[in-house]
Amino acid sequence: MAQEKTENHKKLYIKTWGCQMNVYDSNRMADILSGLGYKPVEAPDDADMIILNTCHIREKATDKVFSELGRLRKHKDAKEEQGKKMLMAVAGCVAQAEGDFIMERAPYVDMVFGPQTYHELPEMVLKAAGEDRIINTEFPSISKFDHLPEQHTIEGASAFLSIQEGCDKFCTFCVVPYTRGAEYSRSATEIVEEAKRLVDQGALEITLLGQNVNAFHGTGPDGKTWSLADLIYAVSEIEGLERIRYTTSHPRDMGDDLIAVHGEVMKLMPFLHLPVQSGSDKILKAMNRKHKAELYRDVVARLRKARPDLAFSSDYIIGFPGETEEDFEDTMQLARDIGYASCYSFKYSARPGTPAANMQNLVLDHIASERLSRFQALINEQQLAFNKQCEGLELDILFEKKGKKDGQISGRSPYFQSVHVQGNERLIGTIQKVRISEGFENSLTGELVLEDGKVLNRA
Ligand code: 5AD
Ligand code: SF4
Image (cartoon, rainbow, N blue to C red):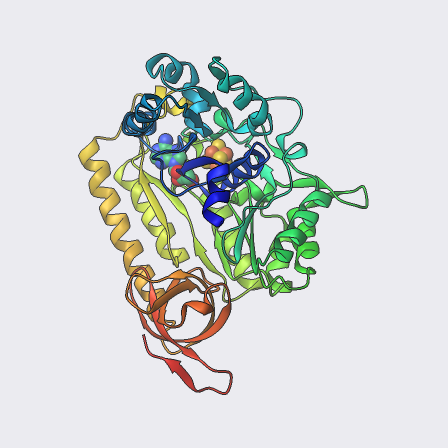
């Protein structure tokens, strides 16, 4: 019976690259397309529609999209040989930035549409199911959020909720202001309602998402403009919700009220991703970050005062044009001073259309690579030290999935570390106490603990 039921549905395969925002968007596309009878499937073969939800932030993003399209095309050809149609679509930030080029170079692609147009999907799909090819990279005046259906697609007990999109900061290396458009906040009223629905569907953790999430300023039920701090207070009152996170923040938008929330709302997890990009004021200026290293140090210190166990992660770009050895040493010093629980670092690479792409004073590739490995060695040391420090502690772990090893389950600590233990799969989707036995560079192992202190299982 169940089999018959799936066969009546059209099969939708979505491949998602990039940030959590894209994961959220893919789920919302699945929601809206369920209205047209589409159901998500795990594999592309025999799908009725394939969507590549793309990310433009990394190097060679467009090349990756074309090679994936090339691979997927054979499924479309096979389907066509059976006299059936498969719609192929490219969504996300590469679609926004390179829409015309994709349409021209890949004539078998039926639809190309940008991140602000997902609410128009049913209409676009109906047109493309005829013979039209669709390109839609508009920034419509009506927000997609007002026109997307309620969220149904939640995976596990940890859910994402987009609250803000776009960015007005224009860092000189970054494509986001061009691909995601101007900064826009959803209404706080709607967000709180969506958060309640997610909790009703089983979410124990909600991550509030936005490219510049702490610039959030949405209208609340009282008609006033709410800050992210106001929103976190309101969401924390939802019964059944255990954990709140938010990402990604800009140091300049860490308001006093938001800093205070970290000391007041215990559901807000003690881990913050706060990108800084460089420790050199000269480079920060060239990046148009609109803050100095000192401001970052100060914000981190004030946050630690509010919540002493707050752990930090960040993003750094190494080898930005004009970076000297001295600038790089300032970056190393900033990372040493902060002491990260984890940290992403990237070698600078030019994104077409961004101001930095025209800069002349490039750092030689081998120098940038060598600096990046020095930086990453420091970060690896810090990650290991942070994880080692957790040995012997009892931490609450939200289990999310099966582990790689037999009988293992994996989850996240409050500090966002991956934790693996031996345990029953039934514990996936629950929060359990775990005594940490060993800290590694990228993960922890431990043992489940019963409330009375008896150890359940060994990792
Ligand atoms: N080169 C290297 N890294 C970049 N990022 C964004 N644009 C570039 C670029 N042109 C990094 C930044 C950002 C993260 C998501 O990706 O560190 O915070
Ligand atoms: Fe890009 Fe973030 Fe800078 Fe906005 S603040 S331009 S999203 S790096």
